[in-house]
Length: 518
Ligand code: FRU
Image 1 (tube, protein in one colour):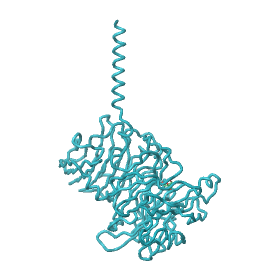
Image 2: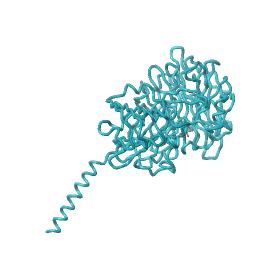
Image 3: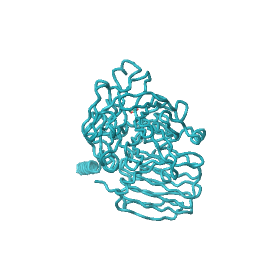
């Protein structure tokens, strides 16, 4: 009898345990699908492509493999947004064809119909992309990559590939890809910047169909720890002046500041043919070797939108890293994009800083708010818990009267998993430590070494804007002067934010908002 009873008890416990487990175990969607960052419904995604604005709509294309959750034959997926925040996935825009897979590239609004694909009333949108030929690759050929174009006359609903593709043949360089095209207003010409292994190549054109080589840039400058990919080139005003500078973005894989893939930038001048580094920026490079757009491990292939209203320069990046992107624990889909960000250029005595902050449209998604000011002590202090959903939040943190020591924020869940990040005012650096953030066993450098971003001094006051989704954090330090973006995969959503300091003085003012998502 005793035996039967205990067997019954065991069975009951097992059953209820099992039941509780099935009930409690969140699905991959519930756990990992971002609330407010774009991710494809199914399949694999990498770089943003063909970013442009027209007729009230922003278009985001992306490197896409619909039939698997790892990189495969590349298509251009498509999503649209009215405000750069809320994206709606559309049908696939470009499929691979006999010339190859459709690799990364850009799109431009051809307002004067220079290409002749449209007419005076209907300006065509022209996509310029890389053909990557898998057959030539298999045969061990060098000339695997060339550039092709396609156009749309119906706001990207349908696309026609140009019958005389490719428009730019391979000159004998294995890695020859990711064309970014823009209209050079002063010279009335199209300019294409593309990545040619360890440097940028610049071409010009009058009609987007015939291209002539102008110059190259970058063989001996900046970061060269990996292949150069996904460039961008655009003019921008130096903050607070009327002076125009040119920024050249170049993504690099591997060789980022915290391992794996990352984006770097250069500041200089462009005369219609050649990009030349600015003198102050050259000095800055002697000290820093490279200028990084984002110091986190998860912002790659950031490039900018064409034709954004009010001359704003808006970029978006792929929120992952080639080191582990194909292994992260989502199954039905893989990867999300960063929040769209507006960039600006600041000049200081030490050099140039390409700042980036979330686009202002994000403000209209701010819902329920929590404001509090706390006096800092060496105790661990709770900033927010059940009063705010920390899987969709934007927090403005304002630290005053800082001292030496560490300001350590912890985003935690009930399982004791945590993402640790903050400011080390003694070592003069920002950091993110995701080694205890849940699932971490992928890539060689996913968890360690921890991410660090050097600061040029200790701060007495500092500001941080945090953008937190279910599986990502974007940290904008001092109005985007230093940015860190990273993803994470806890086994239960993070629900609590705390701050620990080494100090007995100073205050933290927090203005936090839950984001409205529909
Ligand atoms: C960068 C990249 C590009 C290429 C694409 C292929 O992430 O390697 O250089 O065009 O991805 O998907």
